[in-house]
Length: 160
Image (cartoon, rainbow, N blue to C red; front, side, top):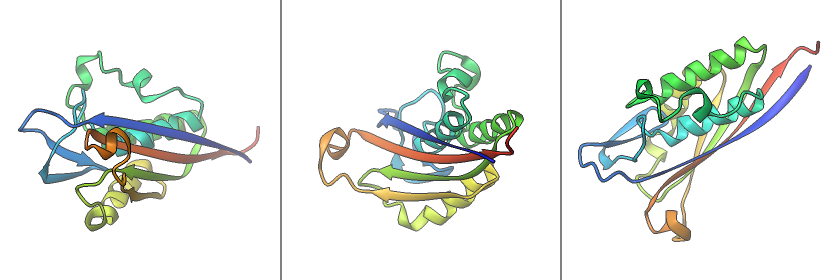
């Protein structure tokens, strides 16, 4: 059996659009300002997608869904993640699991972490876990300039 590991990282600054709401891991935070981005700016779904694509040797999310293409304007990032999982499987790889860590101080992820994991697991078709990390005031994220998510994915396939 072949086993490969991929790492995905995504960062988005806060949006200045007062109508935009924060969406992370497929969960909308109705009382939180959103992130800037071409799609819905779901940094968690983006990091998970990049981890899967990297593990399968398929490039990155920007190659598959470029922000220069109007088709992806406002796109649902969880739907993009499901499409990534399909493409990974089409190449003969099977997602084993994805683990994602999100760096932000607010809002708190703990109340919705289980819901995020369920939404992402359904999209990938394999277990996805989500954890949160506080910035402790360090760097640009500690100054409240945005959100970062990092994910690691394992994919497997039978040896040829």
